[in-house]
Length: 409
Image (tube, rainbow, N blue to C red; front, side):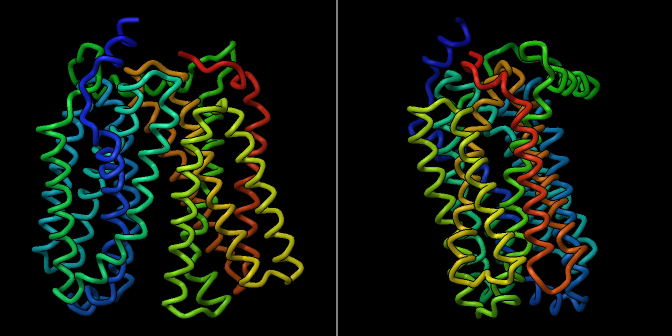
C-alpha cells in the first residue's frame, strides 16, 4: 500500500511520458540518423563502406550490453543515476566520433555510444512501472512507444538534411539531442524508484536476473517464456526492417522516393497501432489483447507466405499486409509489456525490462540475419523466418494460460 500511495502522489511533470518516449528514441536516433551518411563517411575516411557497416553490428551489441547492465543497476542505485551516467557516456562518445578521422576508432566509439544509449534508455520502462499502478501502465507504455516510433521515420530525414554540412554534423546533432535529454533528467525528472537505494554490486546483478527468470506464477516458470513470446512477435518488425530495402527496391523495383514513402507508411501504421493499443488497454484485459494481436499477426504472415510461395504476391498486396502485420507489434508489445512488467514488483522493473527488451532484439536480429543467410533473390527466405517467428510466439502463447487471469498488483 505504501508503494501504491507513493506512486499516486509522486510529482511528475506533465510531459513525463513524452520525455520517456524521447529518451527511448535515443537509440533509433543514434542508429538511423547516420545511415544516409555511410557512403560519404567511407569516401571521406578513404575506407570501404563495409568497414563502416560493421559499426551497425557494433552498435547493436553495445546497445544490448548497456541494457543488460543498466536495468539491474537501476534497480540498485535508482533510475535517475543510471540514466544520467548512460546519457553522459553517449554524449562523450558522440562528440568523439564527430572529431575522429579513423574508421576503426569510430567503430570503437560507436560501441561506447551504444552502451551509453542502452544503459540510459532501459530505465524508461522501469520508470513507467515505478510511477503508475499496475492496471494503468499499459496505456502509459503505449504512449511512450508511440512517441518513440516517430524517431525511425524522422532520424534518416534529419541525417539526410544535415549531410549538406558534412557527416560530422549528424553526430553533433546527436550530442545536442543527448544533452537535452541529460539536462531534463537531471533538473526536471524526479527519482521514481521508491524503494531504498542499495550499494552498487555487480555480483548482485546475477541474482537479480535469477529472481526474474525463476519467478513463479501459480507454480510455473513463465517469465522467460513470456519474454520470448513478446520478442518473437516483435521479431516480425525487425525482420522487415532488415529486409525492407531488398523487398521494396530490389524485388518489387520501386525507386528511392517510393521506398521512403512505403517505409514511412509502416512507421505511421505502428504509431496508429500504439494509439489504438492505448485506447484498448483502458477497456480490455492486456493478456486478451496480446493474444488477439498475436493471432491476427500470425494469420497475416501466413497469408503473405502463401502468396509468396504461389508467386502471386504483388506490391499492391504486399504493402497493406506488411503494414498490418508490422502494425500488430504496436498492439502486442504494449499489451505484453503491461502483463509482463506487472508480474514483478517495481524495484525489479529495470531487470525485467532488460530481459524483455534484449530478448526482442536478440530474436529479431537473429531472425533477420537468418533470412540473409538463405538469400536466393526471392522473398521466400524473408517470409520463412517471419513464419518461424510467429510460430514461436504462437507456440509459447499456448503455455501462458495462467496469465490470462487478473494481473498481479
